[in-house]
Length: 148
Image (cartoon, rainbow, N blue to C red; front, side, top):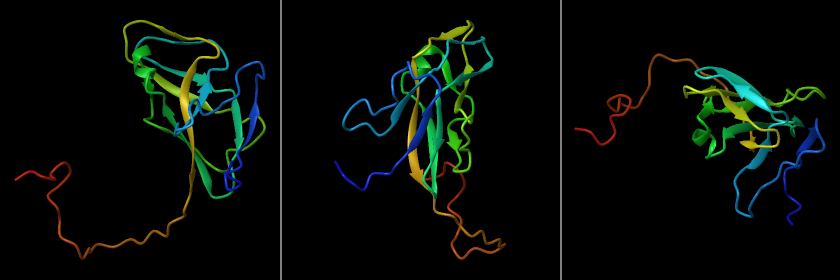
């Protein structure tokens, strides 16, 4: 085991649920579990409690993405991805997944169902510079690469 691993301090709200973990040696993300059974109404947004609060290391953030099977349940992340900021770190700051049910039926997420993946990312602050002039030429617009 490498001693250079990022240390992630995590609180579990329901300790009877499985501990979040990488499911395979080569997994890129940690699987997170629904803390409670959650009903997501048809064509609506629901919020799934993920059973964790985090204290991320300084200059790190949490990326929450859908597990690849979530669409098979008729759900997708309502905001594309979730971003957990470094300073969202209180003892009751439970992470939630905002999901959109794109089906014509209610969807039930069972307690302890794996729904979301967590990746901890390094944050490099940027300095924003506003300008009206760029040195490089235009490329042709969004989606134009390879088109004539």
